[in-house]
Image (spheres, rainbow, N blue to C red):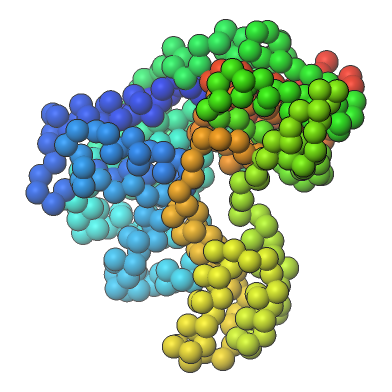
Length: 424
């Protein structure tokens, strides 16, 4: 087993150090004919950014594969489907994402599969390992028995309450001595760095030059502050990227502010409107499919009619095509809801994987969508209620604030909330 790991706070250069170490590994142990580097992440957005950075490594062009852990698990099980079937495993289409990873780990533990993988991927790198649950970590542990693993992680950036501490942060110190980064790279603004340090330490962040905290008594006041922030950022640097980030769109506060800023002139100076588009996540699509829930089986015709009544989109269209193929090519008259929902998740994963998402311009998104990304100006919209415990709230705010390179403004709904750490 050969495992190397790097640990560091947001913006401290974990991914840069990970790729630097990869370059060093390839210099000492060059890839042979037919070999490649396997790069893994949990989220598709992180995968896209990691792939862009891999393209810049000299000599690695065409010699790497960058996929999500879930995508790799599925492709592995499809490649070894005959063995999986002999082991009594369910098909790739029948397994959910969690089971897919555990079943893939069982395959990798077979020497014939593990050795085959090591021949093709002698070096495997994994970014943002703190997001992996036990199912996905099982697969990573299985891979470590055959290939050299290079891993980057930061436990505090894990946002799942049921993953504290994150499984990767518990496992890694037992197999290696993680390298710890101590110097920030993304941001040089003292007030932003102090705020992020305070949040990691359980303290209340303090405003300063480049970091502002504002209590807003009304939506119009909050919208005016957002419009003013965008206006002056545009005057200072027309090409600045601006992100409005919120813990959740549920409750409607952030959506109300985005709508006001996008459609009206705000504040006494009548600034705007400034168009802000919400980045689409998986919730609207999956929720629409989940609302179609039915017992047993349903005729393909009825399923198609129900899908066509949902909101248009690439994922929905792909799911419609899947039902049509099942009916016209496979000859199936009925569809089980479990199969429909499982395919909806797979379709969504593929759609997100192919999306070409840029961090330039202006947009609105949730903290989860903003993870691992960076923007010049960040505006955090913090509503009355955030569905997390105190530790979870600090992690959410930390992940939002640390997306900023130059300036961050935190808008807190209501008066009197900022006395608590962090805000309620």
